[in-house]
View 1 (cartoon, rainbow, N blue to C red):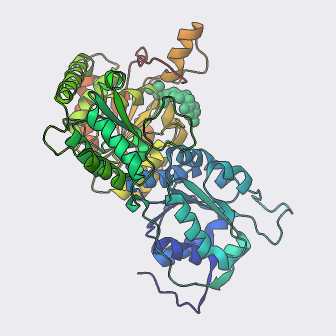
View 2: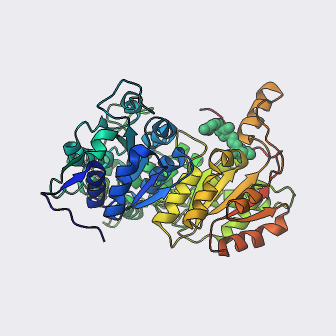
View 3: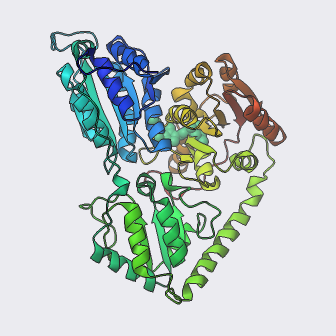
Length: 532
Ligand SMILES: Cc1ncc(C[n+]2csc(CCOP(=O)(O)OP(=O)(O)O)c2C)c(N)n1
Ligand SMILES: [Mg+2]
């Protein structure tokens, strides 16, 4: 239980940081040790914020992003001055692309001798600022609480994203009075709907369409629009396609949820309702009939009632034929996957890995992808049934995010299965975090698709040049032995028959586990473009 601070007591800056985090509901701080952060640690200890220490700052920062993705609250990490912050840059960029609300606390060399070359002295703010919604330095101990409030508010305000504060050593170890209670953070998803005329226009388009679709991305998830989306889709009988973080906002087995029929659906549609994080001043590839900028639940509810869809005959009979035609396509394409899902080659076809795994996943399993082709297959095959159950790196596509995401996901949802899908190349970026999982007893199941190559690069390079360079790894590396050396359960799988029992043992072992599956390097994911 945290000791109360009375307003007249002087406390150190680290305690001020932690008290504010605690007041706003933060329960975990992801970090890697550095003397510049000691007073923040001391404050977290006093305030009852759990400190989760990792083996590389990129994992701390990706864990903060992962926490945000799973909980839709701000994820927080503390990175030591200089190299700690520079090591977190990829995750900050990733959070920026994904609109993940995340607060990065940086250590900083002391202010009283700034410019004299203190250890780890570098001004972070200029290179962090282009990637974040707010980047600032706490130049006075007393201003720390207000700065933390401002940063958390900025992170959560749409479009949500990362924010950065750094704390000069002398200021964060110095003392000031605690300023009293914090104002609650905003809840932007409760804000009013978009402009009523735009809503009527959109509603009319959707009601009168013959072949409407809804396409939604991460913005649907951040905006907590899933319930309103389902009600709208059901009342107007509109097929729904979801990508990225929006997956699971409509369960994959809902009669209006489609994935394999997406290209057919988008090409055949006469009206599309696109829900995402479009910026008002961004050019759109196609002319828009109506633009709706408002809170998602209120806006989608208003579109639904304005369309008056519950009135008998409000939606034309062509609508059912459209839904049925997409269902036929969806089922045909799913049926066509059956052969590869049961492929019995050894080393395994990546599809077979998912053919087995699918039978072992719960409806609310959180699946995390970090890799190339191995994860592309997962993206095609793994169905999500609840929001926040599919985490991939997003548009920045940064390899190495998976262990941080998985650590945070399991800490945020300890009662659920968390499965981390890794390419063997991807494993190398943060494989030492197996040690973090073991030390903190975090029962993530990692599955390595071990093809001994950087497949997503090797196959395209060969297609273009007839040869490849810098695209090979050691074949059959024993990542399972690395796992056991670091205190986790490890399994090697060389044949399809071994796979399901190995996965079962790994899921039942009660702790972190890695299943190292040897996969066929000759299999290339059938993709239309590589870099677009
Ligand atoms: C940090 C980072 N470095 C490099 C890349 C480029 N890249 C994208 S996929 C890929 C290959 C991944 O290989 P692996 O994880 O083994 O998966 P595979 O394609 O073999 O299934 C590479 C190198 C990237 N996206 N991110
Ligand atoms: Mg590989």
